[in-house]
Length: 263
Length: 257
Image (tube, each protein chain N blue to C red):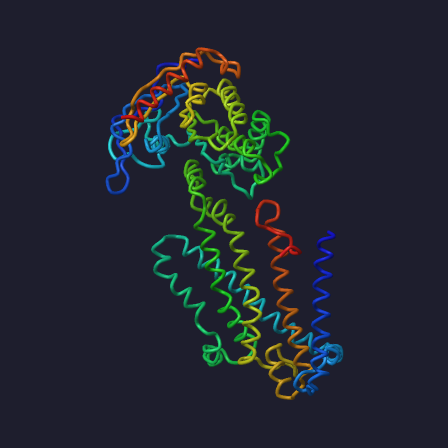
């Protein structure tokens, strides 16, 4: 407990130190506010425009979550397919790597062309970019079951359904969570990137990516910074939520399950 | 306790097993294991000890020859057989009580009957206090007790054990050996036990089958004429020590071949 307090105190000290450094740079080099606003100006922008900031964050959060859930569902289904045989994996696994290496920015215009601008296009981008880690990790979990456990199930004449639901799937849950943890961060980044291309404004306010572009075009650098802060917070919320769920599901039995505070 | 009758429970009729590109693991094995026997299979590594168990359980088919369990093929006899592995091989996401009930659950035994059976077994193997614990909270010896309880839960007529106590310290191993014999007294299953330890094999068995390696074949069969029930005191007797020394000698012979 004491150790944890020290950790928090250190993090706060570093944060304050960075703010002071930031302010010093502004004073020493006389940076104009449209290039780099002061920390105080960013804080004021957060305060003044909190409702629209919250709306932008909510839009991006919904798109990210939609993409993440879609990739969890799809990823688990694909992994179940991959787990069937080595041949299936040899034939299809290279395409998973393709999924990981395709530059999303390059195909974003294509998606825009197909789906049209707006939340569905952004969700689709978040989905595509976060799918690979789920497939890779879940497949690994499904196929790495101890051979003797498989033998044990064989000895009791277990049905394929019993083998799946009582052995392979529970065994894969820790690996699935590793995948979700990686995917959660990527999904948020994907949604924001997607909004730069495919975002659109609903009721005058768009998602974080869209609003960042807009604030940039209006030279509202203080608000742009406020949006970046919101994006960082959103990423953290996603990561910590996943880690909390991971802890909730695994802490009782799995060695590697850690409390959210220690990672 | 001598064999219940002269009924053979396991019959190997010139069984040969080779893997892949002709690597010969076992060569024309003939043996009979009678109902109620406790047979240990010992031999140097690479002599196919574990393969014998896999053949009996039908996890792998023989390349030549025939195996019969109670007159049936191994696959058909499966529900009368339980297997205890070298590691406890528990499901880490299940508590002790749910691990012990796994076999009954897979065989779709009704929940109430399952619970009754499992809780009486947990008492029997001394796990009454840890029923709700997860495997990672248990010591190696405790995990192995769970594994034994799980194997016995389905009322096997035949118990196959593949070096179950190899990873345990000597004191734990000795105690579990004594408990295994106590359980056998009560439940009267036939046992085939694979081990590296001559002392363990002599302590437990009615008979030793010594295999020679490359390829695996029966080198010698050694009856252990020590009366049951056997307790810890047996290990201090001279006749036990003589038998262990004799068995070790035969094992060295097998290795030299």
